[in-house]
Structure formats: structure tokens, C-alpha cells
Amino acid sequence: MSDQFQGYQINKTDDGQSCELKQLSEADLMEGDVTYRVEYSTLNYKDGLALTGSSPVVRKFPLTPGIDSCGTVLSSDSGKFAVGDRVILNGFGVGEVHSGGFAQKARVNSDWLVKLPEGLEPRQAMAVGTAGYTAMLCVMALENHGIKQGDGDILVTGASGGVGSVAVTLLSKLGYRVVATTGRMAEKDFLKKLGAAEIKDRAEFTDKARPLNKELWAGAIDVAGGNTLANVISQIKYGGAVAACGLAESMSLPTTVAPFILRGIALYGIDSVMASIEKRQQAWNRIVKDLDMKLLDELSFDLDFTDLPQAGEDILAGKIRGRAVIKIPE
Ligand code: NDP
Image (tube, rainbow, N blue to C red):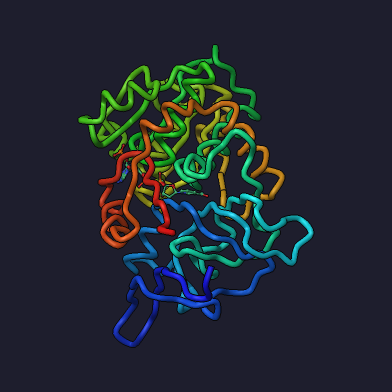
């Protein structure tokens, strides 16, 4: 592969932030001991913020966005990876303060890389991406809390989005009865296909929450924050738990201590970005075992590399269903 390669680059000037697809060279790669050819990437909500510049997620310039990537090692100064190994990268500040996956090449610290698990193709790994691996971390948090299939329904918010759609798919395959909330009731059939037993309009969760409501859910996975999360917390059954990973509605959490001290419920914060390699490997191995790959095909779609800037706007507008996969041109 030549020194030159194609990639997006975000620059900041006095006029603001701009992102363009351009010819880059090895000199544009950042510090790291492993360089790999990016074969696939994907689009996360945070990538949308980076591509559009609508929130200051990019904190180093110039920078190639793309939180997730999967590819083949071209050169390695690390004993952990050899030329030809297939690797996955999710997070660790990549796409925010270190150049990432929206380019034909990436160079990163080997401590951030996970070997592509056996049984998973690079395209599938990116159909999962940070959103899907975060969904798995959420499921693991509920399992570690001790929630069993017979304990009651599990609620998943933002179910048509990336984290939500994978969470519904995983939980239903694991035998949980899943209730999905969505703002897109037109996606009812899609969510049923992924395994949701019941669909609720997310409008039911947007009013200011009372401290306690009727106990409905043994557990929940929330991507929204704000009033939605406060309402979900108020409806968790005695001893249950919520895994919260997102702020699609809001960063705020207008709740009270009542559900915690009167119902003994737990709120688990889920972070995928700085999760340890051991936890990542555990999550990826569980994905190979517990995610229905046929349904992963159903919930993912191909996005052209050149359509990324528009897709960045679309994901922020809540117009992306499931998971976008980007094949990086050779
Ligand atoms: P998507 O944009 O794919 O999905 C988010 C979904 O949330 C939307 O599809 C929509 O689903 C729902 N939603 C949108 N706006 C609102 C609203 N105002 N109120 C309630 N629900 C809303 O994003 P991802 O699934 O990739 O990410 C979801 C969230 O999780 C984001 O906030 C993201 O930043 C965060 N995240 C956090 C991670 C971590 O490590 N903690 C890792 C990955 C993501 P529907 O139309 O079905 O209602």
C-alpha cells in the first residue's frame, strides 16, 4: 500500500470546523505502534457530532473521525499483534483526540486493540460496532445484577437506534421478554422481527417523572437520559436495575432518591470508551455467542464512504435505523 491514502479530515479555523475527504499521507497518521488497513467502519451518534461539528467531541486538529474500525495489520512494533492479524478498535478517544476509522489507514496504540474474535467477519464486527458492544455491556450489567429471564419484562429505550436495536436482539435471544420504546412507531414490524414482544411509543416517557410509578420492569437499558430515564427508573420493580449509556434525549436526570431507597433499585452507568481490554474481550466473545447474526444482517445496512457527511446529519436527526456499515474503498 502506498504512502498516500484516502481519508476524511476535520480541521478547525477561525471560521469554525470543517470536514473533507482528501488525500492523506503517512505523516497524517498519529502516534502508535500498530498500523492497519481499515477495511470496515461504522457510524455512531458521536461520529455524527464529530462530522457535523455540532458538539465539541473532536478536541485535536487536524483529525480523522471514526470511533470504530476493523482491519488488517500492515506493520507492528508490538509483540501483541503481527502483520496480517485482524483487529477491532472501539473508542479509547479515537475519533475524538486520535485519528480514527474514516480513512484507508489507521495507526494506534496496540493497548487499544482487540483481536477480531473467531467466528466474526470484519463486516459483522462493524455492524456491531461501539453501539452493539455497548448494548452487550448493558446486558452484562443487568445479568451481573442477577436479573433472570423469569423476573419480568426488560424495557429498552431508543429501540430503533444502534444500541437499542442490538440490545433488543441480544435480550430476546437470551430469553428475556423485551418491551421496546420508540419514537418511530412505523418501525414496529422491524422491532418485532428483532424479538421485541411489545412496542411502546416513547411519548409515554417524556413527561416529568413522578418519584415512584407502578412497578413494571425487572430491568431496563436506556439510551435517552432526561425525563425518559427518570420515568424508567420510577417504574423499575423492587430490586431491579437500569443500565444507562446514553443521552439521546438529555444529559439531565430529573429523578429523586425514592426508587433507590424505597425499592432498592440500582442504576449502572455504562461506558464503552475506556472499558478495559478484558471487559471488551468478554463482551466481544459474548457477541459471537449470543447475537443472532441473521438478525444482525437485518438491522444493518451498507453506507457509502462518500455519503458519510450526510449520514452524520441523519444520525443526529434520529433518521438512521439500526446500524450503518461502511466498506472502506481499497
Ligand atoms: P442512535 O442515534 O443510533 O440511536 C439513538 C436513538 O434514541 C434514536 O434512534 C431514537 O430511537 C432515540 N431517541 C432520539 N431522540 C430521542 C429523544 N429525544 N428521547 C428519547 N429517545 C430518543 O444512537 P446510538 O444508539 O449509537 O447511541 C445512543 C446513545 O448512547 C447516544 O446518546 C450515544 O451517545 C450513547 N452511547 C454511549 C456509549 C457509552 O459508552 N456510554 C456508547 C455508544 C453510544 P427511536 O427512534 O427508536 O425512539
